[in-house]
Amino acid sequence: MHIFMARVITIGGSLQFISALRKNFPAFHRINRRIYLGVALLTSITGILINLLNKPLGSQLNANLTAFNGVLIVVFTYSVYTRAKSSMVPSHRRWGLRLFMAASGVWFFRIGLMFYIGERLLSFFS
Image 1 (tube, one colour):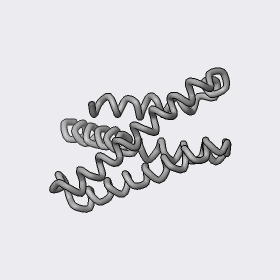
Image 2: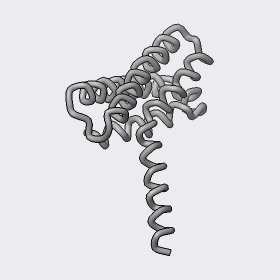
Image 3: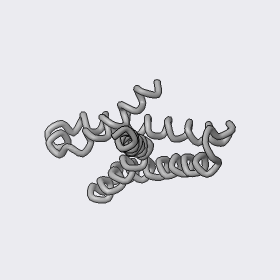
Image 4: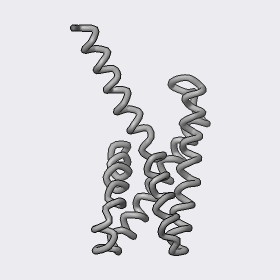
């Protein structure tokens, strides 16, 4: 389920930024938006609850920052939805980008961390 949700966030969110899809297939854009916003809300609220109810796997600071990221995702999701419903297109797009960055933040961090570890391993063995 975790991998499925990550795919929806990564692929579904990326598809929202393709202007040809928005222009030529507005129904797809709306359906994809609803799925994306639902998954973003579900994963962020679940993450917040996990961080509040369980002992952190890493430091308490890491758990607090992850929970804060979840709160940002909830706020950004609300902002994207309300601006889309009000036909505030430029503002909707800006909030959509903020949401995508916040929802993808853990993924971006993991990619960066793997590159860093790989570089350190390569320099250690060479």
